[in-house]
Image 1 (tube, rainbow, N blue to C red):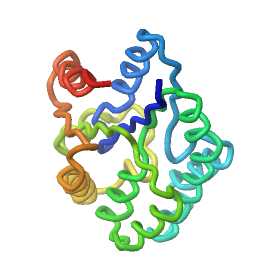
Image 2 (tube, rainbow, N blue to C red):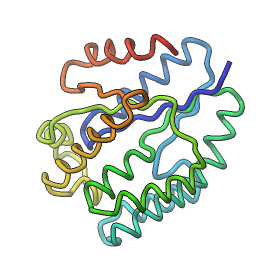
Image 3 (cartoon, rainbow, N blue to C red):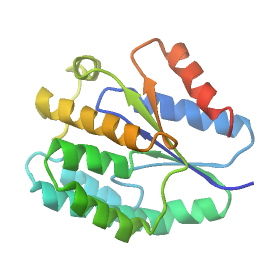
Length: 203
């Protein structure tokens, strides 16, 4: 039984967290050992970098953000993701490199070519086996986030930023259709999960 690396992506408010929990339960019900993690984060260093990146009082240049994301990712790969895959576990990761391309690349204007260089250096050819992009219009994502909690620095970005991020995700999905599956996340949860099951039937 081989390890399986699945990532979930989407703009803020797309419902990633809810569906990630369901994915975990689904694989555990099939007697698979699951590691659930996130980016940026997943390690002590990664969580420290996450705290810095998400705090509005420490805004960084987009290029700095991108390099910090990949630094955290290298630690994450070495300490969490690769060991889990080598032990035939299912790794479910809330965001991965597609998010860096979408947010720092398409959203903030960092050169995609430079991101590709960092991707090749840090990941050494490793890509997720499967990526779900939960797609919602920006207005829907904003409504779902609501006003009950304080938003982090990225969640406070303007709507046009999220439009660029969403467009970036969709462009990535068109470029890698065998890996990235676009899931319409606007319907009821049970409808979304039927879409997930259709993709997961082969795993």
